[in-house]
Length: 452
Image (cartoon, rainbow, N blue to C red; front, top):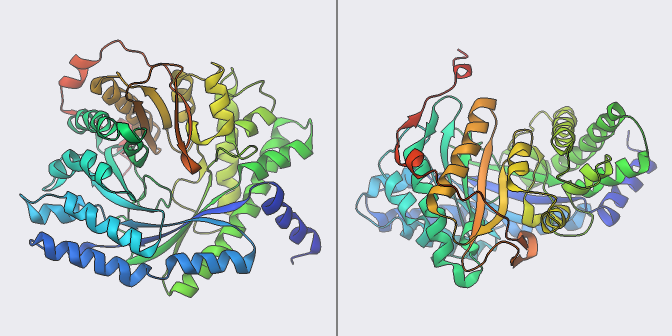
């Protein structure tokens, strides 16, 4: 039974504690758009997206107004474009990016994800060309996001792909340097990428997904922090219980919105992703949750343990609230998007090495981290390899979204504005991993991959 207290609590979450539905993401399969004629394929892609998503933004706005819960973003995720470009060998895959960008602009969504390739075990037709085209695609479009999965627990790490992605990240930064290297904020390199993630920039529509589906991402770090603040000096077990209960309530709100969107758009409901995705807004921060637990600052000793508790409790609470929790679901630690993380980085409390340790127990990885512009492609590749190793061995998703700030050095600032925020350039170990990266090949899958 819903009582007055529950209603008032939810209203307070929205008005005072930054509870929101971060995104309604429509996943669309483009497998039936494959055509050896690239013009025909691009036309089919545009037409199908418009057919399914023409009312997505309006529907999201209507639901937000009707239910009183802010729905911040409306997005689209599509089949990895490398699967389509493989049928058009010799043709420029950036033409697909143009088609995606045009559809995103026409539908009014803020991002469209899926300029992607899945190369964890090797390269299929279309993969090489797509990866090499990523810098141009992200430079020449406004709404397109790109992701590449280079590793998994079942297959190991494709080090040839890792080397390519280090170069792609660096080149993307260089050709978007006049726009604060914004291209790199739209590019993610994954290990164990989920097929139903609604969050950008890593969203794509997996081959095992339905023809069209609605996935919803809910976020409420401010709500969790406020709940802990009200609880006072309780013990750690009680902290975990409070987070679980709060995550349960947040997830129920997200499922309500997801089911309503599914109904109104006549598209199947997929999953609710309960991810504590922060924003630069004061109070809407994962770092502040960790500090509310008792840490002097995010990054001090104890941060990894506190984050592990938070991530686990969020997943437990969400899984009790919905039978269809998916995506990433847990705690995000994107530095430039989290007011507390930004402050910790500026004050020298948070370094990349500590963030790497934290990625072993959070939901994603090294996310939205600004690094010096003269960082080499090989160092970026090695960062990707390290994160992939953590994900591979621990059977979890890890990712890298770093922004080499061209022309800037440690201590300088980079600002994107809006949800992407901004922050200081963080130092990186510059000792060379070039010989290691140049070896190529594949790091074998760990023994725990043999689960059958």
